[in-house]
Image (cartoon, rainbow, N blue to C red; front, side, top):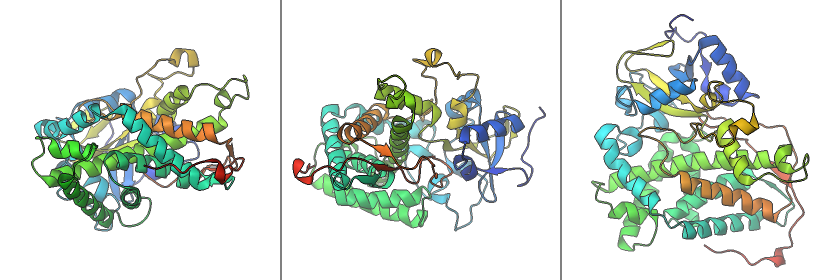
Length: 410
């Protein structure tokens, strides 16, 4: 295959068309057959970039920040004011670990690593169970629900925001902001401003009255230079955690409700939830396309000639299904942990353990309490260039008598 260079807009597929494809795995395989392990794409109409499809090539990008940097100052594209990519790829003046490299990244990453490592998992599990119980209480008597809008999207954000000490009202406000930031409608730029203000108010209030939560851990950590760094770090941590968790919860629920290996229709024995969660990380990674790195210098990646200033998106969904690391043999795959859903290298996910805890409790709480039946197997995917999850997940179940339970409290 000849070396590749971007050639105008002709032939470039849009990221959102890939995540919205009926069969995303087939669409990605077709793209790889056409271009090889690195393909030219449109991040949005008229905004070119590269989508890395090969497992080894994604690993190279993730691990080599000296060549593929996170700091958007290296990007030579000038986004139009109305672009939905500003908040994700090139926000102005953000001072957090996500957009930093090298020593600056390590300084800003340390408080996050230590805060998550020191989390009380027993207390966190109890908090997540309360969030789940309250959400289930809100629809259990109806006999039907949309598990996306009424559960998965809400439980992930409310659980994460509660870990930072936000109350439920603040959590709902933050959820609305995050939905706009990730391109699910609204104005991403103004949503980021609103989210910053909510978080700044919370930081000031927490400093006045500390309590055992992640915000207090951030405030007390000496690595942060000021409250702006704390706020920007909290915003990126909350948004990234939510986007990952809502997708992981939704995909795992859908797998448990539709896959005969998990529903028990084939063997009469339900496979474990942990197996379903692990398989989801492989087949339907929480972030299908991970944004973004920027080439610091001219280089070659796969068969593509990358120019300094090019944007590179890491195709985690494609890399996870690369036949060089993935087979169709369930027995062979048991214990295989080479998926890239949590990333590798300096920017790998710092919250794998608490993330898994939230997803497991969220799915377990729902399926142990209600006899769920999916009512529409046809999936319409939420429009996003980064994540792939259903717009709705409609279910029915035996209505629960309201008097049977005492409302849970946070």
